[in-house]
Length: 633
Image 1: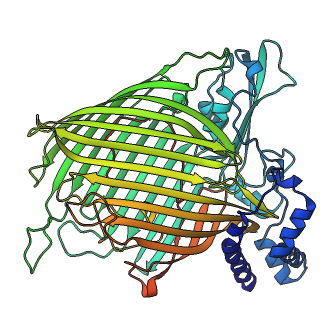
Image 2: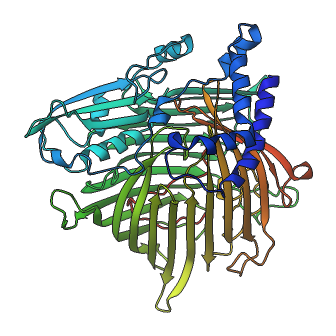
Image 3: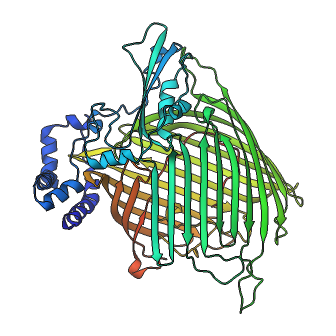
């Protein structure tokens, strides 16, 4: 383990030093064609070649320590990474086959371990790979066919191949996919389609023992029996009770999702914990592709709660719990309208979309007079353009990742019947993104919405939000690669209710690793996040390793009556750490980080070591979902 600590220290140092090298000129050629002079000078500067050679040599020793190091670190050259990818997901690469008849569809599914989608000769080689595959049920061909946008005997529509490949990659049970025409068997009027997919190890579980009589047990599978069914279960026992009404020493949360043909999904979920029971059923179909004409959904959710009510207790017993029981019935339907194309044989990627939604909330018990039965009717008209690029080393470690770009504009209007004072609702959203393999990716979004009541046009519960996400191209230094990420989010509440202070700056909503025990809340916030991620060539027990450095700042308005959050000093966080990712399992990412928080942190000296398994950044696609009210959280 001394070598693990030594390597960890080196990676942390590289995470702080390598970003400075990004300001130096980088050759325009691909990484495998960089001039030897440039590469040698960089290797001398960071002395990485010497470090790697020493570690490689140590793993080849026949001693016990050498065999242990060989089991921990993997230096096998990855052919997929050397092969490279086109930066753009070329929708037109099979234009000459448009409208030909699909004669055959040959599907090849690969197990999670030991196989490579770009290297058919690669097979499982060791006991761990073979044992992992033995515990895994491979995705069935029928499940793969569910996701394809074409069937045997159909005419091959434009973009059907590239869209099918992207949709396969986005399923939870698959790591990567390739969909292409077999050029050797194609003819003037028909084609054979080859589909190759690679699974992830879909089964995962966890056991956390707090003491002899308390702990947490979790079990989930995102590809049950190879059919794409997803179930999640989490049971917590031995919880402390407060002696109040409704308290219980256990907590359970579970869900089950079943995918059907035509991208229909049915899901059931249930939660039972202290003073809270809720569950629901839903059937949905989204605008999964630009060619989708109809989308919609039906859902029913019930809630049986017993929240704490402030101001109703006594100094001796300040906690008063009142029951609240209600259900929500939700339905929506959307239609996508194709726009005229001036490019023969190729569809216009733009779509005009109209949709409507009805949400009915019915209370059977409530202590609050404002909580009354209500019906909200919403309608949306929007315009969407979607294009996808593919690249590597964004949120993954070498797997193919789809990058959404395009334009989105939507106008939502609605009317709320609440039994006291009916209200109108309006919301406007604009978003756009572009990507270039040399300049990086830029996404921008702005949104404004509000309820309006009465003839006096009284604006209520309004908000203004914005978002900017930028990341650089992939830089190379020898065997190391890295990117810079910048993320800005703002949310400003306008004429919110006096009891509304829902905004937090903890975790993914603000400063990563920051905590205030839930006591720090406000009505407006402005967050800036910066990160440098250095992808290393090291592999630890099947987990690829990256070094991470971050700097976060957040402004929060905690005083009612103000709109902007800049009147108060910002909260900040700075830190470094390691990110481990295994592309072949469901639990793909694990981070161990050290953060320093000068203000508002309830830890010694503002330092905190924390871990998480959720990605901090994510893409916002240009798809329309169900019409809705902008969430204020």
